Image (tube, rainbow, N blue to C red):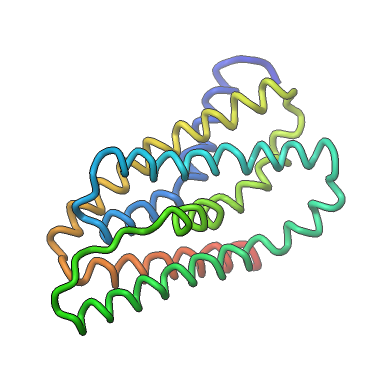
Length: 195
């Protein structure tokens, strides 16, 4: 592969495709926290972008070092994503129910640990992208993964912003909708990964 337009276009399009799960989770986070400040939005999008960069890079590294061990792990990816996203989604549903019962509950933000779990869950399927870029040398793999991360950042910022707008309008139902979205994403990753 050469450093040409096709390389950059493929990397950007790969980034768009991989960012869709992170976009949906960002949308859910925006719904859950409609008054989120810009700094927090950037940090949240940055976490998703970092994982979308790291996972394909880790996959590339695995192909060049421990490929046969990674092949065994690849079968677990849909299961891991399902468990992590359903766990987060169910917690959001529980929080929404508790807030409904208390009547005076403000939006509770997702903590740093929750964001890390979301980042792993939405990017774990990107590990296999390392196989698709296996013929790249290190610098090309680095740039391709960096472009994936940059694209993810901007897509997640858009997702959070859209979620915030709808979150303000939906008020108390935002956490329920966000939880349902996360569970649906987990199921979608599982179904497409297993079947």
